Length: 106
Image (cartoon, rainbow, N blue to C red; front, side):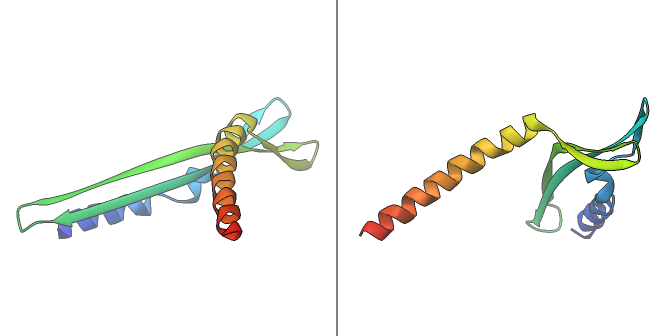
């Protein structure tokens, strides 16, 4: 299990800001810095000395980009990603509110 934990530690140490804020790119006269949200998860276990296992996964959603134009910096959102995230969020919020209203009526 110690080998697995060390390997996992090395992998996790490579994650961080570089996964959420990309390298600035030059497009014509503008400088664009992409921004994303990254989520990772890992797990591991052991059933004895010879049986180690583990797994992990991750998700990265592009949120938009910081654009520097004529000396001013502003954020331009990725509307497709915002809609993709907003739809499930609105659905879950609606379900939660429905449960609260039903509980309040009782």
